[in-house]
Length: 257
Image (cartoon, rainbow, N blue to C red; front, side):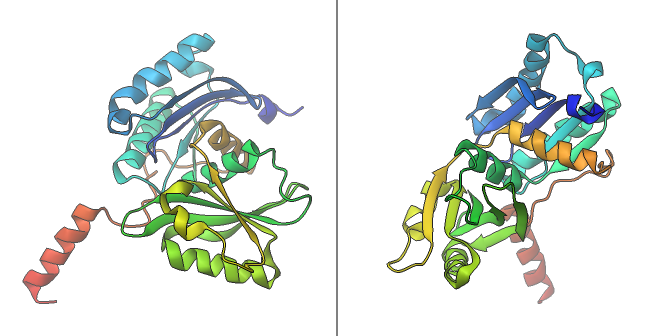
């Protein structure tokens, strides 16, 4: 057993309607919290983290690492986790490791199903978060029962209908036996449903964000010697907030662009 196997870390993600945090040591979850009060993330997050540590009899000095979901997702939500993570890492002088919130969602969904896949064939895990106007924050990972976990696309915001059509075409060409739509799957359920003769089963896997999955991803980065600079660490929004888009449009109109 290596030194890294016994890492004690606090993991946090607030990129969705679910505030999730977990205290993990050596892969074992010592405590976790899950709250669905999205508008209260900023109020609840610090007391929730404090209680996690107190219930485990630990303090900031006992941690080896702070793991934070970096987004994409809710513009305000992502900023909350990133701000809190940076503050704690700086105050406690601990390493900070950011992870993709979409990858956290994908890994959590995969493991929630027992990582069984379809008996050894390739499964595409496609995490989705609603981004309004028919769009989703999404990406894709390839997985199988033999331990494969491979990123296939960059995190981004995509039109849901065009995205699933692309996935179906590529799966039908032999890319995967199953497509799992994970996370906010019911939001565009009518789009995700498979067409007749699709060639690949499309499965909806509703799943809440789980900070324990973020901790696993953070450990992988940490083992590779990767850290994030505390002061330069910023959210991955993948797009401007709606207010900023409107402001830029006004400025462009005023300039005659």
